[in-house]
Length: 260
Image (cartoon, rainbow, N blue to C red; front, side, top):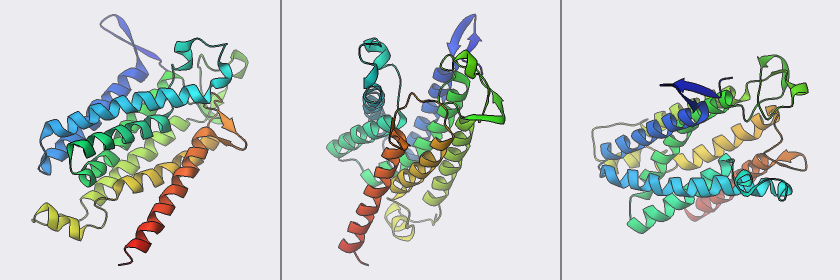
């Protein structure tokens, strides 16, 4: 663990630094791809900034909701001090979609680029979690001796590096989505490419379904309790299940509406 690194004599939170790197890299990637497909560079940057506002509201808001039992014990800043990925994800998607629709941008393209940018950002975010001391794994004799201010002194044991596992999985998801997006690259117009690449316009659905499966399974390897539980599953597992059910319903509806 290395929650802080020293740069020019100042301590910088490792999580914040890696999250910033992931944000800049994924933002550059989305903007570069948008320009490559005929969009003005400012349009994607503008949409991402609006989405970031939704991400902050959704992530901090869901964190507070999952910790309502601590109202009266925690300060207001502590109650909203953490982030829940699914809250940030859907808050950001809602804000970005609303803005893109208002501005009449090419929503299928923007959705595809967002689907690729999200796991790219998340790759760095989960590495930041590993070094920062949050989202740690269950005790495992072959794991890493893990220290965190969230872990009581008598529970400091070797733990499964679930953050690094998720980082590797979402990186693989990014590469897979990128491959799907460019699976067919004939020298033709964008409209012609869309007719020959069945994945175009559907990458966000693929991302949400794939990440929901990843998150549902790796939650069993999580050792922290702060994210909240309801019955046998964590808050994130319930959200993952609901996401999969909703996506299945949407897919069936679209199939019935357009059987061909």
